[in-house]
Amino acid sequence: MTASSVDDGLNPHGGPIFPRGHALLTNSLLNKGTAFTERERDTMGLRGLLPPRVFTIEEQLHRVYGNFRRKPDALEKYIFLTTLQNRNETLFYKLVQEHAEEMIPIIYTPTVGQACLEYGAIFRQPRGLFISIRERGRVAEILRHWPHPDVRMIVVTDGERILGLGDLGALGMGIPVGKLSLYTACAGLHPCYCLPITLDVGTDNTKLHEDPLYIGLNQKRVRGAEYDAFVQEFVEAVQQTYPKALLQWEDFGNTNAFRLLHQYRHRICSFNDDIQGTASVALAGIMAGLRLAGGHLRDQKLLFFGAGEAGTGIADLHAATVRLEGLSEAEARARCWFVDSQGLVVRSRLGKLAGHKVPYAHDHPFVATLAEAIETVKPTVLIGVSGQARAFNRDIVARMAALNQRPIIFALSNPTSKAECTAEEAYQWTGGRVIYASGSPFPPGTFGGQPYVPGQGNNVYIFPGVGLGALVCEATQITDEMFLTAAKTLASTVTAEDLALGRIYPAISNIREVSIQIAAAVAEEAHRAGLARRPRPADLVEDIRTRMFEPNYRDYV
Ligand code: NAD
Image 1 (cartoon, protein in one colour):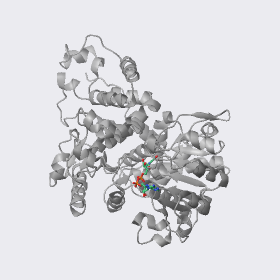
Image 2: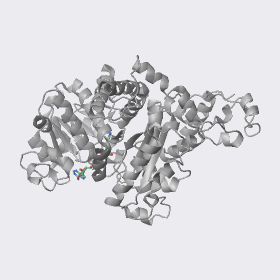
Image 3: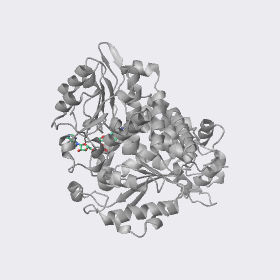
Image 4: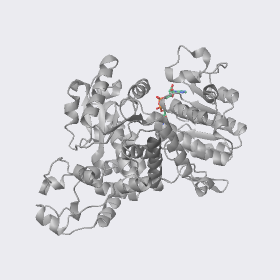
């Protein structure tokens, strides 16, 4: 990933022919729009194709930011940004970087959720690769249709569990596209390394079957052996076509997500952000929260509402962490309890429980409700990952406040409408004592005259840094230890000023610096574990900094 290889990759034809004229203006990676210089206009066949005045990127930024602000709602802003990205990626990333706090909720949660729901209706131009199960046997050929020869980061979904919105089939493409934009904006991964992919195996969402604007295969989801063979062909085709690529599994339904992760994580450098990235960001939040609440991680009792990818992912990483602090496997698992749609996960339910819940089926009487579970488990930390809006009502939150001086309550379900409780409710119902984080952002507020800033346990704090760290050292695998080191690093970036505002994550405006620190820690861990294919540079942080994509124009002549 040297500067020169990035430059090679910049030529989207992968060859020596640099586009000219109209082809240059319609190439989003190379286009500079009105910022093409006089010399470039003369030598690259652009004269007359642009209005005469030459603008700087700062002047262009001023214009596009004004246009962005004029859009009446979040979805219109999303459409505007997508169009800009398809026209001029440098300017798009400049805008996102300069106004990260404002842009990230548009290109990712919560707006991306709405954008996915309406992806068919707002569809203008394809981005990424759509590979449908009808193309079995031709996956490698399709991967080669992508114009950039040196793909390093693939985010792939089959659209079955998009955020907390369920099965959106091919409309889920908004997620890989958005996540990869965050890789570039937050961790400086060059856009030419990034490839979003949707594996379209159909959808079980009958509303989409009836939607005349639906863009995907109009059939029920293919499952079982045929699905597995398709995914296997895809993984093998990726290894063959892009041998240096890291594969991020994204928003698969939980029966496939756990299976695919376990099946492939040692065969191809890959991870599942919904399971492992979420785990890392939540663990970081607990670590930072304990700086306010006091106490050790190993002494905490976690109660999860929702026992899917996010919940059991967090519990697995938490258990691995406290094991490293000296607890036995049994002691570590006993720190984590689950309530799922049927009630408390306990031994008497064994036989009917999905595999990922079994390690947390404790020997304890069954109770049916969350309120009863809180009374009997007495958690110090309550984590909502159920997709059930407003499940943490006044009674639930007050119970946590009665048990704990500083209750830690995370309402992580996305998008905003699905959060188990709002920040304001959590502050009100605990008399301002809560340590709170959500999955989607909530605005700052005041309680008792004291300002607070709700933390957002957004995976964006973790995955760009982890991916960048793995790529710079060319890691062969992504391990749990890497996610643990990422969590510790993230927690360490939370300042005393953040904590004074109740904020257990750093400000999003610091995200690039946070990603650099995480990338360095992850690469260090890869070197320590013997999983790095590149030799360790003398100064990891400096090495990472120099490799990051900066959204500035370069001179072509
Ligand atoms: P999932 O489908 O794998 O799991 C959802 C779980 O909730 C399942 O165990 C299900 O049984 C349980 N559930 C459903 N209805 C319930 C009910 N009425 N009572 C109790 N439990 C119930 O989904 P997931 O990947 O675990 O994601 C869950 C939520 O967490 C989603 O809304 C997602 O957006 C959110 N999430 C947030 C973050 C983050 O904030 N960083 C990261 C990942 C996921």
